Amino acid sequence: EKEIRKVLEWFNVVDPSTDYSSALDVREPGTGNWLLTGHEYTRWKEETRGVLWLYGI
Image 1: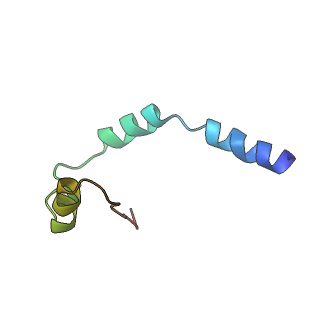
Image 2: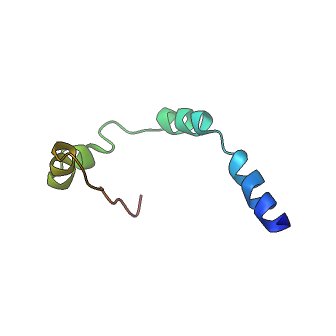
């Protein structure tokens, strides 16, 4: 139980808005375009259900 509490406390430390702002400041133009224009993404977006599995990001 103590171990679980420590893990949950660790997750609560993350502030996504801060991480997003920091990442946005150093983002290069065009970053991620390969994903949004790729066949797999456009096919997934057009389907009514399904999972798009991303790894290595």
